[in-house]
Length: 136
Image 1: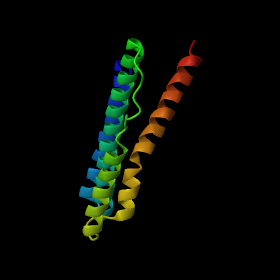
Image 2: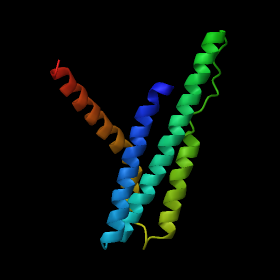
Image 3: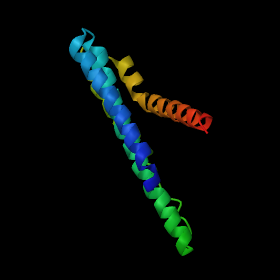
């Protein structure tokens, strides 16, 4: 899985930039509940992204090792769905206990940061490959 390391570090960089911008918005504006919800959602999205990445790497390594050894692949492999749902449930529970300090809609938007990061990276890479192809 070493070929995915640059992509994963790029995702981490995007997440850190987004969290930095949200922290700046929290400190500068009067919309503290919105920015706190966005920050908590983004952090949970980062944690879920990392959990999924680690589980996929472990599962793919296990599959490759089993195929090389000629063993049958076990069917009880998991990608950590219950753990990822639990992190979201904890974030929602915290938000529902603090409705004055954390906005629930902003939390949900922050939880979707994973999708935005992947879309941003896809557009950036497609643009880079398109301009690189044109320069031949």
